[in-house]
Image 1: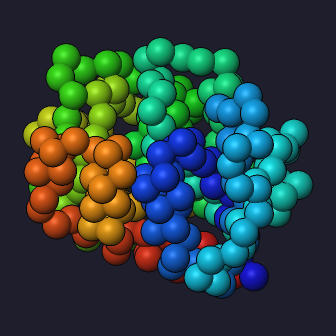
Image 2: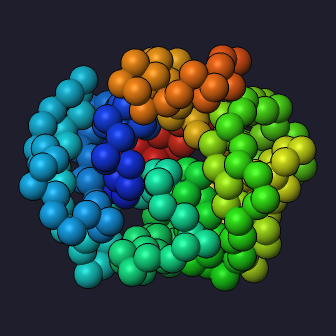
Length: 239
């Protein structure tokens, strides 16, 4: 069975947290998902083990070494936190990503995860003047079988990667974000600034929960094809 380690950094947002995780994990089913929440001082308020749609979820402590978990993939979600406003728990999250990259484990960083991955590998992340909440066209500036086919992305961020790490390639840009997606050269490691997990179901649930205001909901009205990216990544990782 496929095993995925997921840095679950939006656990406090039911739709984008648990709902987003379900969208990320669906293409892996049947699979085991190990959830890491280094941002939580106390995770007792959140479910620790459950099963849904062929995926078993288990919340665990951050390991000393990611390799001891023998994952087929490591994924880092978005977050309410900001790389430009560094918090101590980010050190543990960064260590997980660094270990996975070194061990040649497939990695996907999403939004905050993309920024953390780039920062960890020696890139630069800065806060932009304006926040972006939009579905935008993606411009492929490099060839990659995973990223190049994706044409529309849903963005919700203010921090962004301003300088890619050494040994990485820019694959996708947008009008507002030059480094919208990248790959580590020669490794199965990708980062995307957009949210491929933000399906219509997730967006509508977030709005219904009051976790997304009317302006954001309207900004996300257009369709995007992030689901195709998640499916392609899962196919690449499954044993």
